[in-house]
Image (cartoon, rainbow, N blue to C red; front, top):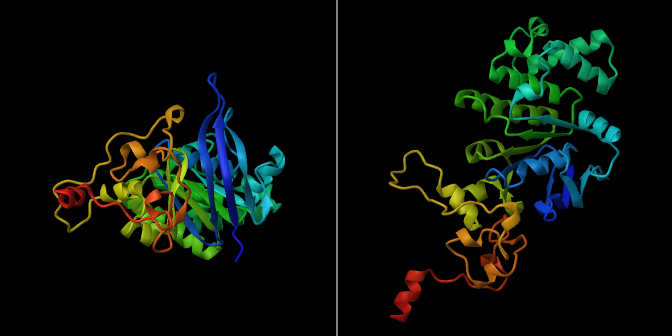
Amino acid sequence: MAPLLEVDHLRIEFPTRRGPLLAVDDVSFSIQPGEVLGVVGESGAGKSLTGMAVIGLLDPPGRIAGGSIRLEGRRIDNLPYEEMRRIRGQHIGAVFQDPLTSLNPLFTIGDQLIETIQTHTGLDDKAARGRAVELLREVGIPGAEQRLGAYPHEFSGGMRQRVVIALALCADPKLIIADEPTTALDVSIQAQIIQLIKRLCREHGAAVMLITHDMGVIAETADRVAVMYAGRLVEIGPVREVVKAAKHPYTKGLMGSIPVIGHDIERLTQIDGSMPRLGSIPKGCAFNPRCPEAFDRCRVERPELMATPGDARAACWLHAPGRERPAPPSEVVSANG
């Protein structure tokens, strides 16, 4: 099956007085129809910028400096603004972290839904209103017909996020970009929104690019997961494999920092240091100053994504073909002494 979305060697940069800063560097991935791809990483890793590039909403002076983005085989990263705006409504939907940034406080929910539906489908007033009520029911808004006349401030945070999801589904898009859709919500509401996204994905056959820093959300929702660090992709693979048997030391650190119910552990795994600033990314693997398994090659040569035991790929020299894994320091000491 051909991928719905193909991101190929994407580079995003920001011009500065000292030269361009590379915020996303050589990122490649694809999403199949009906698949949920989770994109996870620390703040500043480049995951949201990647999502904004896909939907053509990069804030200036940020720009795509290289690579390509294709939707159903058609290149979309170099389209004129108006043409991309039509694709953004008809073929790509978006759900953002704060629903209030997606909703106009001066207009009712019904006005905003009906306008969006008519813009992208050409339905008349009556049909568009009927479609708006149908969408609100589909996302779990009680009393949908009566709530059309309500304003955004009259909804709770979880209900506003449901309205935003309804807006994203107005034209029945093939791809939904969900950028931190549960971060501002209570835990119980988060679970409801996760289940809603999974159900809508299954029923509509839409693919989802789910951007978050919460591995719990990824484990519950995604089919595959892509892990980003310092603007680069460090691991990508089936979510169960990455969660249970991470291949990259950074991903192992992320997994080890999550408490597990029923496991009596005194201290969680800690990744020393912090992610480098864009202007001071080290040579070689960007993670090498923080990596407990780094060796000489990691400090001078940048690894590309490579095959690992299983179905995941990791950008780590520990998985270079024909290379034996280095012995832990304790084994080296005992062998010499």
